[in-house]
Length: 493
Ligand code: HEM
Image (cartoon, rainbow, N blue to C red):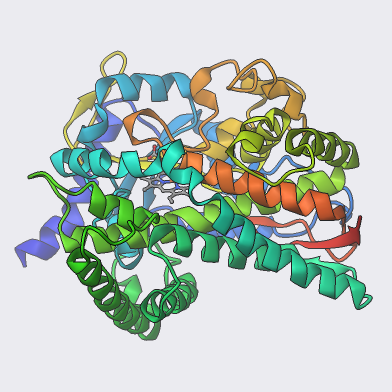
């Protein structure tokens, strides 16, 4: 049929146009593109190369062996193929700056493959919407993330975290010392984000939370082959399960929104993000209930694992660097002055901000930023990037690039952020843990607040070291995770 013909031929045409425009890259095969190459090399590099207690932070060739290899042959900007989709690989900050000056935030697309595969998680929420719709979503969501609004969430974050630490204390006082902190930190962060997004103080909220967690577990098994045609049929059972859970979650969120819409204005306003969106949802560009549902899911999926992993990798780095545990503990004690954590305390934790940045640099939870070109664009001399090309920005690659950071690139040195918000990187677009331009992460203040609260409470109660059972194997499962968990030894203080 004509459809099949276009399906077979159009990637070839794009490949031809890209090559004609001077872009090189590994030769793709049909229909998998360069995927086999990517899978093969990944397995070969899985052998642990160091002892468990001296893990190396030089992780680029470990997590993206194929990119590290292709960079050697084709440089920091080249084309590769995920299935039948062309991706422009970019690990060159100046190139990103140029892209950013040619394409306005609202004209960026998100890769179609990525949208389709993540539909159950993000729907048409802020991460995925484009054009004028993105402008409208961004405009309505941004005020909900203002510092004054977020401050109302501090006490609930403290409460959830204190429960987790209570469990850790019970474990240590029963004689065990090793805890897989990754699992608990993710669980805590998912509770925090559910409370912050739509509230879980009633049965409906609790049910949404449980189903979202189940959906995440199902997505992990089904979402591996991004871009390969028909791959969802290989995981038919999980695909079906996710779809059913998705419908149940939507139904519950719709009814939460409906009952909130029907509440009298005299009722106490809800301080979660959904409540703030509903309160700010007055004029003609308001978000529909469908869109509000998708924002709730977007905040949940976009907001908890990323923050949890920033914390997990930080605790790992601190376990290896006891001196920084002491430095932070002193800063926390001084900032709190014997009182509780509040918004004032948090702003005083400047060294903790350096540590967060350094952890986000070495182990960026969002290992890449993805975009799609909606119109042919011209970057630099004559090279035209054809409409439909996906852009894959290798954040891990840039964060570990010696040419950008210097010889101490793979060392944990938070003080590099003391005088520079880019950590002394030679190019300010070389440090992109939260993306760039108008589409930069809307939740970064929320994540920083949560990060500081959790880290302060942990460091006040425990001193940390790495368990001999830890096996250093960071890998990409949507986000950058320790593939064998994060067992730490906790010493109560
Ligand atoms: C350490 C934690 C986090 C990291 C590393 C992170 C990272 C990112 C990155 C890389 C992007 C893409 C930006 C781009 O395309 O240029 C993004 C966008 C986004 N993030 Fe985050 N994020 C974090 C926490 C959060 C939290 C807590 C929330 C919400 C509660 C959130 C919600 C979003 C949303 C809605 C977008 C889409 C923004 C837009 O396209 O306008 N993120 N984030």
